[in-house]
Length: 258
Length: 285
Image 1 (cartoon, chains in turn red, cyan):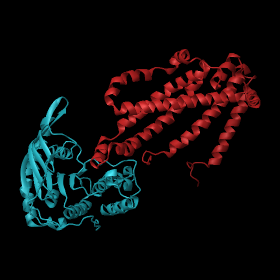
Image 2: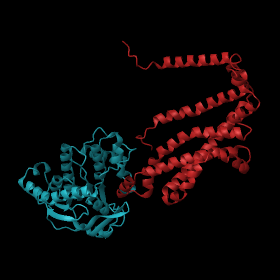
Image 3: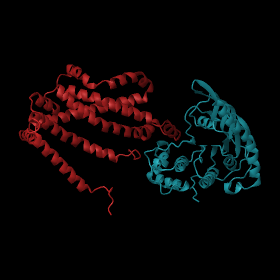
Image 4: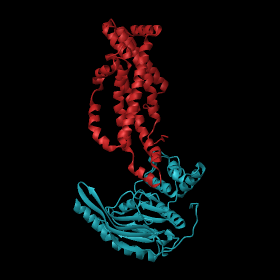
């Protein structure tokens, strides 16, 4: 007799998932205009039509491109600054103790509240959005890096020093390899927050980007446009997140990080 | 049994020859501050270790034996008194010693082989990749870690990590070894084997050794001189020269009547201190 608990084959699971999706979409299509007004839930066929129209006239690429650029610029700036400050304060505990409560207070602040300030500083456009995304990422990477620096085993450093290692050799062979896994983790977790912040900043103060497209479509009472932009965003976030998830599975703490 | 290839073979010498002072502690005292109280861990310790001597420190736990090793290694400054090494005061990390602490300090992201060979990656002990590989293979053989070269420390048992740490220290043959319970986590048979291997190496390389242990038998088997410490604060209670010949056969030595006599003599010194240390801990609670 076959084991009831045995995991089904991957192809079978995939087929089941496809059937589930088709049933879901068919139900949605049927309900739209019959059970619930299309004004609220649009319909899969309308959504496909509007996404197809955006693709055909190329207008969607302006928004996708803007979202990607904002996301990665904000992510890169925030990550660099966060790692930099994390290393700096991690290696000078006295300063860290001094500024820790201020950093903690700023970390707790919802960063979206800073957007009007950034708009005053930098105007509506790329820079204020990048600043907002960076302001979110910087804290996540700062705390990840700081935790990594604190996690360095003092006994290991002393043993290396007794072995005759110079300060730069200890940095290269002990400090950096010990911190790297923490930075990886920080980079992985903060990309999701960066994407969220990007979309919010576009919706609040921008004239392009997927967040703007959602907000704009809603203001026109165009529910198909809202859903269409969400679908495009869904595809974009999947394209960004799935490779990161695979990376996460591959990196084990015991593996050498050289 | 694997035997280490020697870089500079030299004849073994006996324990009785007069030798230069290698390590000197002069009226050393150490205070630690814990929970707002100052606790004296080591008090009035004056101790000389001649070059090439194998010295064992025994005493109840918490008597400051490890503290003394930390000071000789230059990781801790005494509250009072001075520490000298080769006639000069120890003021910074002492790179002339190899120090095996109780807690192993292997790098968790490096394999066993890469951990053991790390000393030869440093500028001050640089060796070619080929030579490094050869020496690492010898050390792995010596400590019996064959087959685990590509494992990470987290994948090893406590005893195996101890052996890897021992190999990492012995590979660059420091002139002085500071050993803090080096065989603590090992099973009895492996302990015997490694004690004998360490004796071989120390005798032939003429290293100066300070061994901290709470195992009196281990101390008498291996050392030229045994110092018994009191319970906290650690003071020297008794010192005994161990007259056995070099090179020694630790396996055979433990069955000799003289061995039992010395063991008993030192045990009589030590047992009061163990009782005192347990009583002291009870009293503190």
